[in-house]
Length: 149
Image (cartoon, rainbow, N blue to C red; front, side):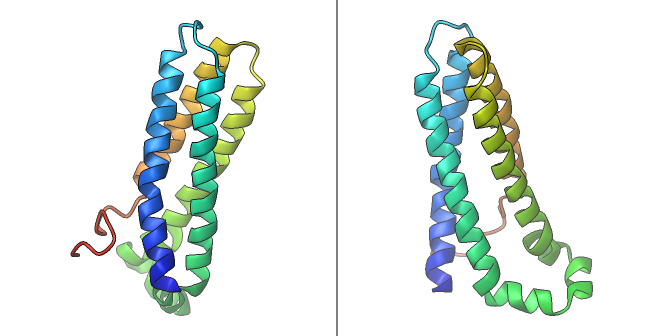
């Protein structure tokens, strides 16, 4: 089960990143106030749904991964090791924060006064979310499952 979850988690990151970039572009295009927010909202919901699915898979991995279970056995050593600390503390923290920010942003944007304000809020929250995601991705791992590394 662990390898399948890890591969799914790895592949889904590309869907999430693509949806995030499309949401960002849609929000930018709507800043002039002439485009309805509905299109940005739809792709934004895809982005947020992908993030939530990633969170569920990631939390499941956190519980079943032999790597995580081994690292959790000795937290003093884990926290002293930069690579281990990244996977056990930093990655999950940044990703949970990204999901929270995206969710709050979706609500705030939806409730804004007009489409221009909705696009602006979607842009800001999506940009912050993407920055957290990019900072929290383990780039040292293969970009696609099964590729070297």
